[in-house]
Length: 287
Image (tube, rainbow, N blue to C red; front, side, top):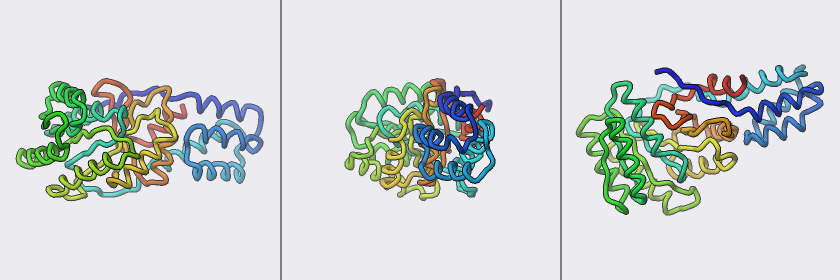
């Protein structure tokens, strides 16, 4: 599958270039630190960058850029692991993050590999969400299991899991209701959904992914922390990555919470999704 390009955010590099245009890097550490903080980058990573500049002989923009490129790539690269295939994918996140559209893109992605996919429309709180997922199901040729408006999301998941098992589908993608991470009742509902799945699928076959809008900024880390405590996330999907996106918080999520970015989306079309590649991601930030 050919990977589509996305537009890189330029503000960070423009600031970086301006910082070093007047002299050696060591003379501009405060400005550099401020720029990295504004980009939502983890404080521990920032400290490491500043210390590396203090110890090194880097004196210009190109040298600083290459140092940052290496640190960012290392921070985003997940630890090597032989994980079993994930049969169930739970999409969690707040309203507006792009969960339903991401479900459609994942269905297109897996269908392109010849896999059979089923949707579980577990966002029963919004009729529009079910209608949207049904429309995507038709476009992608994906079977959908739905309940009734206002019904029990866990019941929809129960029916979907049974259908997935009986029909020997390759992937069950579960679209859940948008949740604010500080709403305990909704987070508990998400935990209930997870328990239903665990009755039929072992933990190692379940992917619980937090869908994060790339424009969220610093609050992205708080979202990831709260959702991770509630349902034990296995990774992140970064959506809506374009010229205005602030992806620095992703570095903190991967570094501090040890949650890898699994996929990235960057447009409205179903094809606008790729498996996350740290080197490619950072290269496009630093061109």
